[in-house]
Image (cartoon, rainbow, N blue to C red; front, top):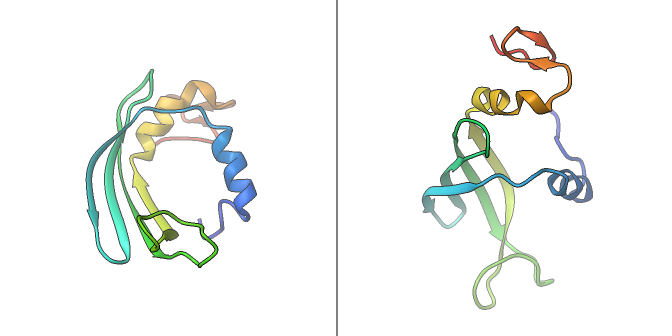
Amino acid sequence: MGKLTFDTKASFLAGEQAQPGVPFTLLNTWSSCSAVTFRYVLSPASGLDVQGIAVAEVVEAKSNGTGVGEGDQKWQIKTFYGEFNSAVWLTDLKNSIVGCDVRSGVGNGTVV
């Protein structure tokens, strides 16, 4: 907390590409001129559904052609905020985290 998770775009892409895919269901979306908010459910193959909400603050993309959108106006994410049921997510992942036993409270991923 209070520190960047990824300090470069390359480290973000490497971290994301190393993760296995998880089925994602979009529940709702809301948008304004400067943000897109969406609710979702992640449904891992073995585990409980994890609900979350995310807000992507967007800005007009620079004229170098990056970003997404229709016509000449393109947008890119400036800031991303996410909240999800991390306790359920940890429980779903308990067998794939070395040294973590969420039931006994032993390890570096203790759920109390």
